[in-house]
Length: 379
Image 1 (cartoon, rainbow, N blue to C red):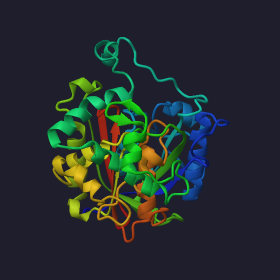
Image 2 (image 1 turned 180 degrees about the vertical axis):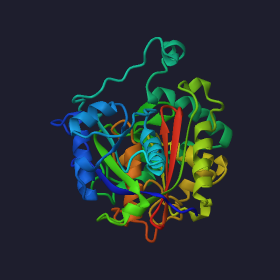
Image 3 (image 1 turned 30 degrees about the vertical axis):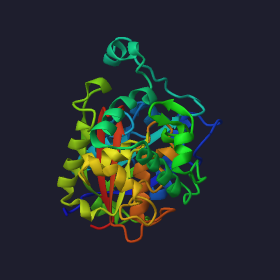
Image 4 (image 1 turned 180 degrees about the horizontal axis):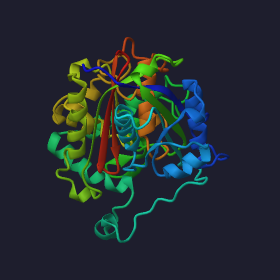
């Protein structure tokens, strides 16, 4: 493994998660930021680097009253925050800033002060997909998923098992939105949304946010909480139109971002103790396991069905309950990062004993973008 020059020294989510009808989206940003700053034992005036997505950096920085010397407004969907971590680490190493705050917040359920999302009629999606009814994630993701199932021999029961296992992890998490156990039969008998997805295979819709604070590893020893070091990073994009993916049974952005992070970290798959794969819909962990190189795609469904990713399994996956059961305000990547940090700190509600390396992998749009961050608690 390489020496780790940058660390996470502050991490927190909003005070509340779920349905928060009395707090606007910009206030959720502030709540998450202040919680992370308190976690790190810092003051707002200590922050000289800032990154966020959807909301502009200038709006949130102004609201918080900070004056950064480095900013990043990269917004490529739910994995934007993985890219922010990568960019912030590079900026710190380059000496552009010393202490970076990354925030995310969405009033995804209550829509209080939420930035409107729309597909412009003159965009590529607006011209070539929207007229044919391909608009929301639920109507877009089924296109590659059906090809994935046919090509790799994945069954409906195996995809349903992803949701079942996520709920098992969520039952261990007091902050999770959905904790009641479910079965494969429950999933397959739940309301159809867009074939092959039923409602229990689709992400939650919630309110909330989170924030991270990064600084150099040399400074990290002076902070009150256990530092979590950034071991490897990767990012890529493919296409804003799901119809134009290079192949429906694999994600090119995944295949670039993941291996980049593994090579930079200098680790192999057997070194991974804990794994987070963005699960806005139940198929994404299957794509992630295959495209990150853990196993051939043909084996991913059975690997999960056999219990390898559930509590006590050999590859703990989405241990907070994921976007299917923990929470999903619209851009889930921040919550996956938060769980990786908790696991590396040794404070997660469903802690993986002795975990030293966590891989956190995200998706943006309908396979349009990807970011991978590998964390460790060893330097």
